Image (cartoon, rainbow, N blue to C red; front, side, top):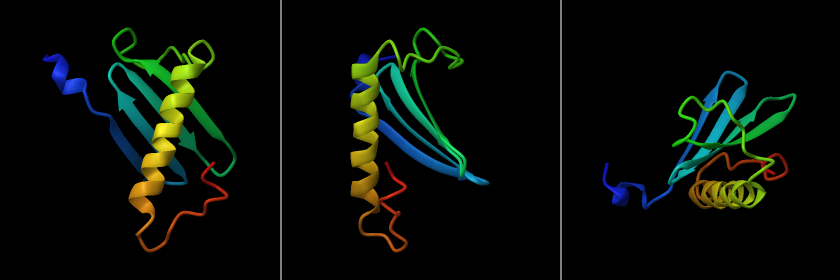
Length: 93
């Protein structure tokens, strides 16, 4: 695979039942957020070393985790700001 194919970030958001899955991939790193009415779980994975997303790097790679988390939140705010049913910003922390 050509290295140029990883030059852009990929963002997505998907609701499944009462859970909302949010993610951003930047190169080999992937930030994932799983939100349910009871709690939010967040993860950071290195997809080159961990294709099955079993080894959460959130605690050992805080700078990357925070960078991708913030990147996701900025993206979501930007793409959703002009839609009807704007997200409740209090729950979008």
